[in-house]
Length: 110
View 1: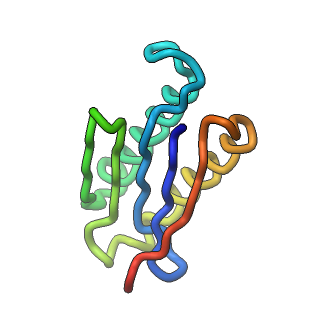
View 2: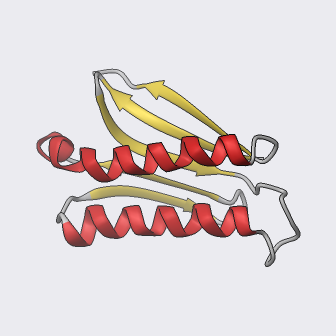
View 3: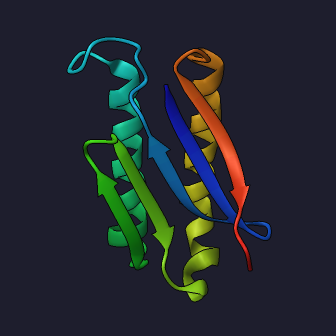
């Protein structure tokens, strides 16, 4: 199962974490994993390349995990549209693939 964690600080999204394989199909043929991976790559591109937001990133291939976080508090507001769009799509996926994906939210300390 893939777990998507949306990280909040107050009312703002400040990062996302994705971990695990969905198990929808075998590796290399799993459209759920492919969709999640593509969405995370698009999110990273939007934030870093299009909006010039500095990110903290952590990737662990053995754990099939990636974590993206907003590095500077000054960038949090302009990061909201792409982060909210990612969260919306992730929640839609859960309704389509409830046995393969889960979305959770965590609130980080201020």
